[in-house]
Image 1: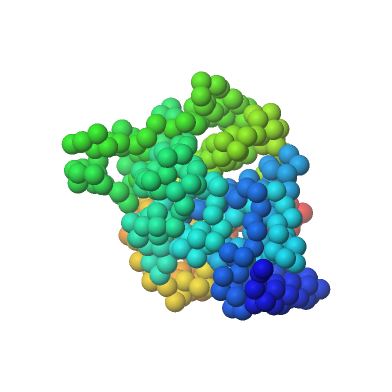
Image 2: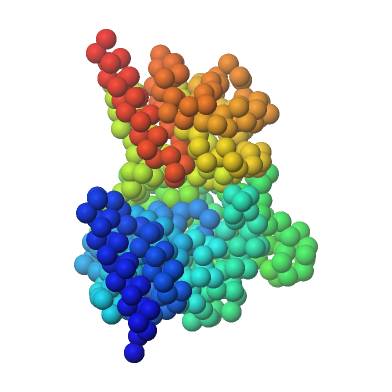
Amino acid sequence: MKKVRFFFAMLSARFLLYVLKLLGRNATFLPGKIALKIDKDFLGELTPPKTVIAVTGTNGKTTVSNLLNSILLKNNYTVTNNSLGSNVQAGVATALLADSTFTGKAKKEIAVLEVDERSSLRIYPYIKPDYLICNNIMRDSLARNAHTEFISYIINKSVPSTTKVILNADDLVCASLAPDNCERVYFGLGIDTQHEEAPSYLQDIVYCPDCGASLTPEYIRYSHIGRLHCSNCSFSSPEPDFVITQIDRENNAFTLQHHGKSEQYNLINDNIVNLYNFCGVIALLTTIGLSYEQISSAFESTKIVKTRYDKLSAGKLTITMQLSKGQNPTACARCFSYVAKLPGKNKAIIFVGDDFEASESPCWFFDSNYSYLNDASINQIIFTGPRSKDQYLRAQIAGIDTDKIRISCDSKSGADILDIEKSMDIYVLYGPYMVKEANIVKQKLIQLGNEESVS
């Protein structure tokens, strides 16, 4: 018989859910927080859906979670997810209780749960995932997830040995997770697909974890992502079970091979980070039993959510909105590199500076590779927000011509100091907590572009 404490927690959380919905607010965190305050074992007393999928890792969790949720829904599965809310213990509790009966029994077939790496210790002992997908493990915010060995330790300590893990074979840190789990599926990109011409100076693994000798790269895509092997022993990157072998940008498609079969899918986005996201999603969905037809058909009509990526036109301006995870050196460098390599000669980049960064160390700027911005196709760079002067200094160290750079302490002012006579392609980069401010910048750019076309 379930404890009285559990029912009181459920009643209180459900009442709060109801009130928040009446107020038109997303109930993403608070109901779960209240439930856990009343009953610390609340998660363990819920009956989870028949299949639980956990999505974790440094970069790409939200994109992967949203893709999984979208494709499963399109194939008529009923899905519980926390894609609109918090990925910590309280957020997971809110998502699960919202789709449960009053007695805590799940109403839906599958749960797709985005899980913050450090929250693993508080979630997996109660909600044991049947599948865990991890795209990468990299250094992150100094205040949270800076050390990859620390994060790996937390995940390894938390993940049940019965969980089937789907891991990025091209990330040796990620590929080494959950060493005791026998059921392992690896995904990656083939050698003929895109990779950097020169190795990144920021790498989170350089020595063999088995013998301590130097790791030798076959090639590096970025950071420590690529194919590596030990110069002294047999340690090496595992062979992927699912691998993207070809990218056809002209026909907007990519080819994936697994178990001797070759399959073609719609190319939703050609950013290399998203190629890993797509490959991991396909690997997981195939592993749980979806057919190629079910997955490929859903890919045809699936898009990355607009809070992560959006592209639109306003007069002569092309405006691209691109999420760039703040305090994360690799994620930002990926955005810089992607913009620099896109076609076009008159690009402008506007950084919507995160107000939260004012209390954070600016050290991560110096871990991130700003030299990608030192590209002839980029003729304006606008840093905004409380750390704009720090970014200006970092750009100077990267050798960027200061005549290209403008700064402002106001995060919403990027469009105001842009010279639209110089740039036709505008890229707005912003963190996950700055979507509102980024949309204000976008609306200003749309107005500027439309006014320019009329005049």
